[in-house]
Image (cartoon, rainbow, N blue to C red; front, side):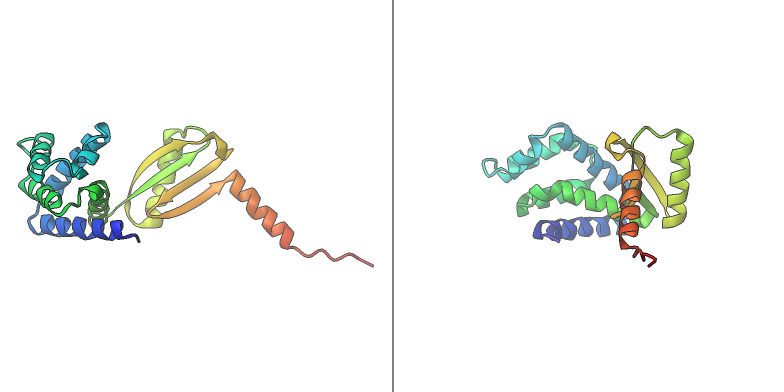
Length: 186
């Protein structure tokens, strides 16, 4: 784990614990996810927040405008604290970690399902059902299409990869066959 990730985890966990104690996990998440979307949409926002050319007060004004008046006070205070500490460069990672913590407490695991061709809904639902049985959690999925897979499916879930592609199966078969010792009859 890098120092940036440790710092992001420390700050995200502190915010998460406070929001949890106050019973505000979801409202805080709503504001954080809206902020992440704004940062994704306006790519210059995060570098500006990290820029030494702007004063902390200017950065706080920028954040206040980006969040709007209805933003949760906990989120506003957290972002002001990050600005004061010069930690805004790790903001997106903090938001991601907060979501992971929220998913964990709510029994959710996120999965990316990649196939060579688009999956019919019934097949996607079957895969999700199997993943839910495997993980014991509710699965939130995102599907991708990668024609380079040739066939089969790759699932990334909770930091683990499940590879049931044609290419992977052929590779395993090749390894198995090359390990077989052939005895010639004399």
